Image (cartoon, rainbow, N blue to C red; front, side, top):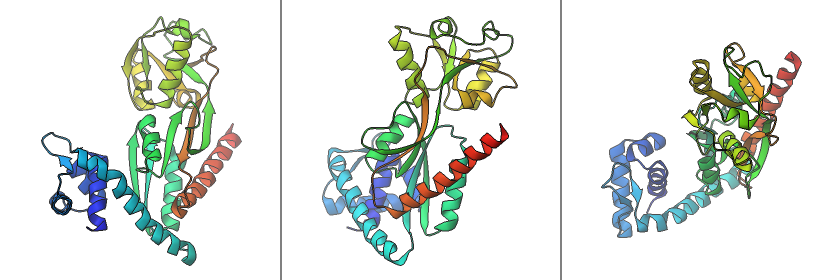
Amino acid sequence: MELRQLEYFVAVAEEQSFTRAAERVHISQSGVSAQIRRLERELGAELFDRSARTATLTVAGKAALEHARAALSAAGAVGQAVSAVTGLISGRLTVGMVNGCTITPLFDALAAFHAAHPGVRLSLLEDNSDRLVESVRDGAVDVALVGTTAPPDGLESWTIVSERLVAAVPPAHPLAARGTVTLRELSDHPLVCMPPGTGLRTLFDQACAAQGLRPVISLAAGAADAIAALAARGLGVAVLSESMASAYRDRLTALPLTDVEAPALLALTWRNTPNPAVRALLHHSRRTFTASDRTRHERQ
């Protein structure tokens, strides 16, 4: 049994696809399949059910996954221990970001990290916030930028943005002249919002449930650009955060939701770990986000 076989096994399990796993580990699909077959022969059991379009774990595969991750983590810890002594950081770092992310300070942080630590292989995973948080918990993702309503339990986090929800409508919309709006007033109109599993949608759903409201979400999209474009065309009232809506002030009027006091949070989250690569990325993230925030305030 080789570490690379375990790496390929974990990649297929997390990607649920031999093709995507091959892209992730940078070898051919046939190479991944051959190594997984060798591992299965050594273990005497099939690890994946290949009868469907997605590669799903068998009972034996589910039992092996946690131990495979632990073995890879232990092997990585050896390199990290040496790196801590020599001052070099190597290995692999998986970073998650919420769907439709356009937060450029995160990209700046990744670029600065890569320039400072070229020996670390970066992987980027895009998903909704709920799944990213769970991926951080189970070790599949090292650091994730997520939308949330509160810091995730059991994880470390750093809140980058905390702001209120707003409704956004085109200038000709009946609500445009109101200045502010309540959830009940908003519920009289079709809405365009983030999909379930995102922090902003969770906050909105919780606020509506607290008032016994069941608004009609006519359309859902994972990117703020798409939500704004749909709202601008009269397909529904957009539900966004303040900073999201401000980017579309040329075509949409933002209306604060007066009865939603809880803020929408954008946060970096990670497990408490001695991994020097995680600490280094957090260091660069704090620098780039702090610099971006300072520049934004100077322009106001």
